[in-house]
Amino acid sequence: MATVALPIEQENYLNTNYGWKSWLLTTDHKRIGILYLISITFMFFIGGFFATMIRLELLTPAGDMMTSDTYNKMFSMHGIVMVFFFLIPSIPAVLGNFLIPIMIGAKDLAFPKLNLLSWYIYSVSALMMIYSIVTGGVDTGWTFYPPFSTTYSNSQVVVAGLAVFINGFSSILTGLNFIVTTHRMRAPGLTWNRLPLFVWSHYATSVIQVLGTPVIAITVALVAIERVWHIGIFDPRVGGDPVLFQHMFWFYSHPAVYIMILPSMAIMSEVVTCFSRKRIFGYNFVALASIAIAVLGFLVWAHHMFVAGISAYAALVFSLLSYFVAVPSAIKVFNWTVTMYKGQVSYATPMLYAFGFIGLFTIGGMTGLFLACLGIDPHVHDTYFVVAHFHFIMVGGAVMAYLSGIHFWWPKMTGRMYPEAWGKIAAGLVFVGFNLTFLPQFVLGYLGMPRRYHAYASEFQVLNVLSSAGASILAIGYLLPLVYLLWSLRYGKPAGNNPWNAVGLEWMTTSPPPTYNFDETPVVTWEAYDYENMPQEVPVGR
Image (tube, rainbow, N blue to C red; front, side, top):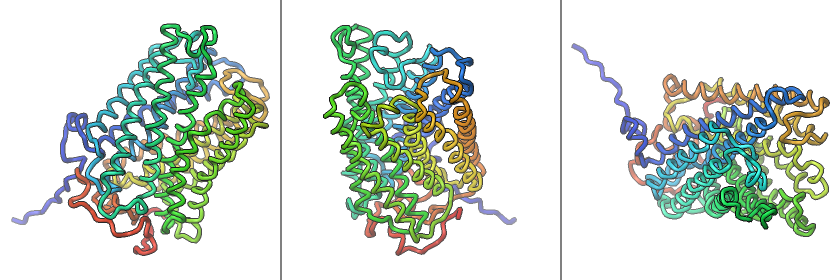
C-alpha cells in the first residue's frame, strides 16, 4: 500500500505554543508586537469612529446633529485616542518590537519581561481611556488646556489624564529597551555604520521617548492635582500660570511629532531602497539626520505659542529654530528621491504607500513653514489650516508609512502574502480619500474658518461637504486592508523567506521566524543595503 508524505509544518513563533496563556504570558518580542498590533488597531477604529461623527456633523452649517458639548467631546476623544493610543505607539510598538531584534541578529530585546510589562501598561491605560469614554467622555480637546480642564469642564478629565499618564510609562520602557538592545545586542560585524536605518531612526525615537515623555506625564498629573485639590499651578485665579502649562505640554508634544515621524521615515528608508533596487543615497546623512531631528525637535516647542503671549524675541528665536528643523527632514526626502532616480522602481503596495508618504509629508512640511512664520501664524492660528497641516503630517505621513510597513513586513510576520491587487486598490483609495478630505481644509483655514466649531457660516459648506465625502473614501480605504489582511492569514499564498528579494537580516530567517529568530548568531560582513551586488530579481507586485 502506497503512503503519502504530509508536509511538516516548520516550528515558528506562531505555532511553538498554543492557548491564550502562551500569548498573555509570552516574552517573545514578536508575539508582543502582534499583541500591540491587535490593541492599537482596535484603538485606531475607536478614534476613527469619532472622526466619522465629526465629519457627519460638519456636512451642514447648522449644528443640527449633536450639541456643541457633544461635539467638543467628539473631537477631544478623537484627538486623545489617535495621538496617545495610536500614532505615538503604532510603529515603534508593533514594527519596532517585531523587527529590531531580528534586524540586529539578536534573539530578543534586552529586557523581554519589561517588554511584556509595557504592553500590559498600554492595555490598562487604553481600558481606562475607554472607561472615560463610556462614562461621559472628555471635552477639553486633546491638549487639556487649563483653566478649562482644571476648573470648568464637567467631563472625565482626571480619568483620561490618568490614562495618558500611565500610557507614558509604556512608551518610556519601550524606548529604554530599544536603546539598550541596540547598544548591547548587535550581531558580530554589525557596526554602527552598517546598522539598518530602521534601527537608527528607532534609536533616535527612543531618546525622545525617554527624555520627553516624563514631561507630559508630569504635566497631566499636575492638571489632575489642580483639578482635585485646587492648588494654584496653572489657574491664574489661584496664582497659577496657564502659559506654563503650554510650555510644559508642547515641550513634549512637539517632539512627540517626531516620535511619530522618525519611525515613519525609518520605514521609508527600507521600502524605497528595496523597491528601487539601489543602496540608499547618502546613508550617513540619513542616519545623522535622524539624530539631528531628535535633538532639534526639543528646541521648537514654543512655535505653538506665538499668540499665547510669549515675548517677541523668544518668538523670533523659536521661529528660526523651527525653520532649521526642516533641514534634516528635507535631507531625507532628497535622499529617498535620489535613491529612486535611475533605479529599477517597482510599484508594489508598500512602494505605493511610500510614494504617498513622500508627497503628503512634503506638503505637510512645507505648510508647516507658514505656521513657523511670525507674520502668517497669527492669521491662521486655530483655523482649519492648522488641522490640515497636522493631518498631512500625522495621517498623510505616519499612517501612510505604517500601512507601507505593515504590507512590507506582513509576509515576514505571518508567512502569507496579501492579495496584491486589493493592496493597490486600498492604497489608491487612501491617497484619493486623504487628499479630498484635507486639501479643502487648507482653503477653509485660509478663508478663516476656525477649528473646533460645530456650526459655521454657510459659505464654507461646499468645502466641508468635499471634506466629508473624502473622509468616506478614506474610511473604506482603511477598512479594506483590515479585511484582506485577515483573509490572507488563511487563504494567502505562502510567502517564502524573502518575497521582495530584499537585503537585511530579517529576510535571512524563515517566514514566520522561529522563536529565537536565528538557529545560529549571524555574522555581518557586508555593507547596509548592498543591492548593487546582489541578483537583481524583480520584487513581487511590479
